[in-house]
Image 1 (cartoon, rainbow, N blue to C red):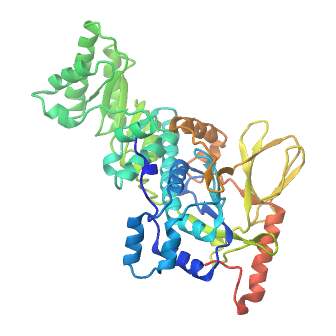
Image 2: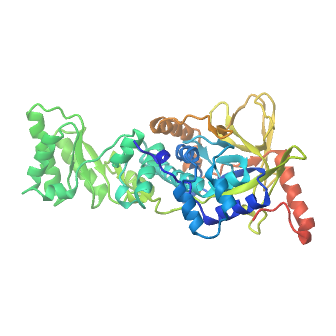
Image 3: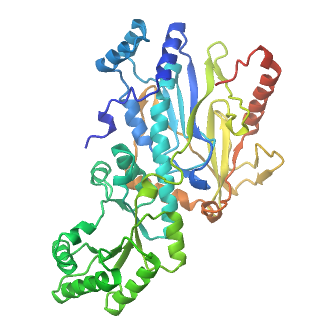
Length: 497
């Protein structure tokens, strides 16, 4: 099935990336650099996010090239010189990329993707990489919250018609399943990614027949093993549920196995209607009939309905999920962290200073250690360190809050486990990483979510998971900030705007 690997997205970039590239080209500066893609705050007031979109980033990077049509268009803009356009003819990505695998629980200010490449290559990746990671991570996070509210009930992604365009519908469905949904209504997404497709019928099906009962009977005859009847077209309790019961009774009397059957509610007071429908179905001898619901659901409404005792065990969630309506942007950024110095033979750290403390970046070529409690397997926190720093489980570990440094946690050897989060994806321009299937990533995500304490997953005032800095990284960061303060009159050579 054609995916983005057959689409040339090279010009899916901002103009200033190309103008900067030409500047680097004409200045003869194409130093090896480190860029970090990260985000600053969790979406929807969540205590975490879900990393998603790496497979599409891989496809995009593999296919990076400027076609003749691309070059003709750039030439027509009148701002790019021929030597630079000639250089672009043979442009390919030749660097290294490290990333946090899809489905992993993530937190602000830690690199989700680390690019080590010549600056012209690294610069070009920024817009498309952020576009992909931001969108899919946003929807995967929203889906995980909706699924958590449902407390084990199945959540179906039903948002295609409300998504912001075809790509948002397709890749949003992919991300929603990774975040925990059991399937999607989007048939193209099902074909592309091997994910379950699900659905029933619309009110128009009922309205196209002379009466509701005939519509139900016809649908049951067509789909006896997946017979979910939409009960609210005319009168949910007065006709919809009684007619559904009549059809189920006829199926049973005809010897048709009732393997997966029930009703769907799409309007009205879902708590009241579901409880009344449940009683009617049970009294008629159909205690295993499914009651599913849709109707502008989100995690808060589902949680409220569960708390009201609603008899709903299957949920179709559309607009509020596929658009992450309450928080429509993830906010990921892409910042320069280091430049390789040939004379020194190593990376020189770079830092962005800001009047807003949360916008000050973490410098250097970094790695991430995730720390778990050995006994419970629950997540303690993440430790950002410099590449080459080694921490082991058989040595005591002291971590501290990089803002309130007096807050320290002492971890005794043998009481915790460590895992490095960033894995190699590209090396010297060649992809060395095999993405799991979407359903495999969904299982990874479920396991990842199980490592969170319940206090981190609550919707109101979730417990914060701290991202600590190693002492070496912390000292480097504040040395750089101090050096900026002392050299500000002469210009800050180590800042990045």
